[in-house]
Length: 135
Image (cartoon, rainbow, N blue to C red; front, side, top):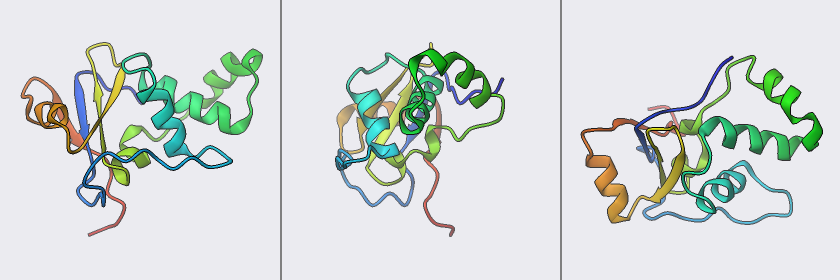
């Protein structure tokens, strides 16, 4: 089984992120990946792991019924999946994701004091969201 989970890690916004503050992704008739990631994390901080967020996003967009989710989870994670470093939250909308000691995730806007504190915390592993463009 593959995993997208991080532990004790802060994923900072991408170097080329155009946002100067955390922006809520726009609501659309058909939920976007950014919108679902934001909804799942911001509504309930530190309630889900990255794997749970990535899978729930996939399951909702694919219309997978609750009864079929266990088998779908196994099939989904039988191969590698993009992690939250590739999420539009950090690439476009100005959010950092903190993964606690249990791998649970919360988001912080790039212009917040908590974001700055986490970005400077030497006890965490640090990485950035993936750039949108090549150099």
